[in-house]
Length: 167
Image (cartoon, rainbow, N blue to C red; front, side, top):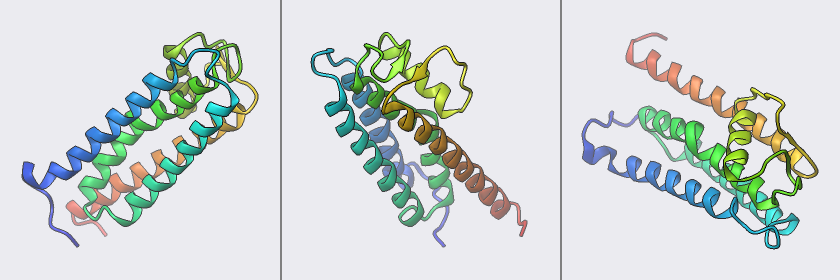
């Protein structure tokens, strides 16, 4: 088992990874959700969906096999849960376009980001709804939200138990 990271120098790579994930997901959302109607559509949306799947699989593998410190794992999972995953799903929704091709009722980038957070947290207000291929994508986002939340809670409980001597 690795020693607990205690100094800024020991956290440097973790903080750099977190900043990288936040910046990359923000840029993906910013660029893809602002595509013109002539550019956005099924082709760009499908490529963005494949990229999203590859990202989720690679991050899951990375968390489970490469991050040895429970504190670092919990931190990175928290960043993913709060910002990265909803932004990436919103980027994909935006890549499909706004003429009700993906999210019925979404008029722009803020709407798809809102829809993504509502879907990820499985709140589902009902003011917007997915259509076409995005129905499967929205289902996958809700399942991802459940799984990531479960992994986050499990990591938090394990860290708490380890730090407080509970078996």
